[in-house]
Image (cartoon, rainbow, N blue to C red):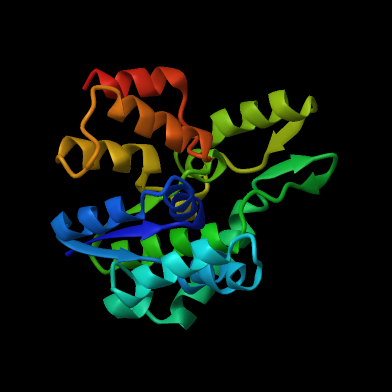
Length: 224
């Protein structure tokens, strides 16, 4: 069995672009499960359900849970307590990685950390998995912390100290963005729109709704 762990950023991207049916079609062909930690459910369903501006999106995501397109960690025999314990460890380590003006920088929040925690737990159990996250910071923290260091210095125009060469808790985690997921869906013929511009439109739609993907990366994907 394989698992794709969805962070709030990717689910929201699909929701805002009206692409939740694409997730349904991808799930039919995926030999495994789409899982969200409870903290991601809170961020995408429970909290926005009480905000009129986001209520419809929350209802649509809840429908995916009702249909078992998305499932909670109990579906892969992982307890909430196990995830909470690992999440605290990751939050502590990740948010003590960069130092600016003698204060640690807050890098990731609970939802992202819970996804990373679940990924580590699944890997320890021998279950292949990937984390679907659109946020650049989370991916770079696990893959290229030194590059993230340079990015922060450029963005905030100040000296920032990298306190750890690598975040050991994040080492080995694999990531995917909504942009790559829609490419897979297009490649498999799961997109109902049939037009030569569809792939370009899909990739830019995900970019403009939060997927950290450059124009150069988009053009590279289109050449595949």
